[in-house]
Amino acid sequence: MMNTVVVKTFSQPQFSNSEILRYAGAKAPYGEISALIEQCKEEAEGLLSYKACYIILDLNITGSVCDFTLFKVASKSLASALSGCKKAVIFAASIGIGLDRLILKYSNMAQTRALLLDAIGNERVEALCNTLCAEIEKETRFTLTKRFSAGYGDLPVDTQRDIFALLDCPRKIGVTLNNSLLMSPSKSVTAFVGLKEKE
Image (tube, rainbow, N blue to C red; front, side):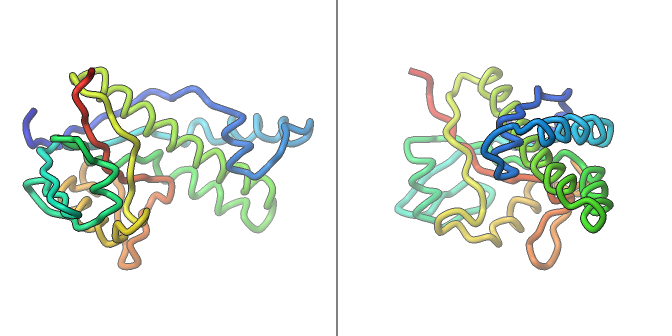
């Protein structure tokens, strides 16, 4: 495995209405909400793209310092999450800017629709991350740990700068980072994932 950034484009993962409802904070698929979800999915579908980029790096953990060879991160939480791993994946994934624009369109005129579209966006980018990780696991001899993102535990949010510099996210998949460390498109994720030898 070379220290090379890999770029992937995926076909649409299967929707999970239960996850959409969970992200929307709904308890059950009431008739009207269920119908509205289907309308929102249909409206959003053509605006979504599924892109990701990642790199696999050697990993050495000393205390709370995770040394990825190309950069280091000091975080007890990340060191714990990657414990036992000699390699790690660092990735960025996004479903594109189209849904952000649609949510903005409805934010003042149809707030329930905007809420459901936002929930769909969360479900879609999560599905993309799951698809990416499943593919990496299939293509390697490793088992992947759970994803761990900047801002969780004691992993500083400004670790995003290191990730973006490493992956060149703007050029590779069209995701940018502003001065407040917010990503655009908003339905984007960056994360660390450990690689463990299969038993």
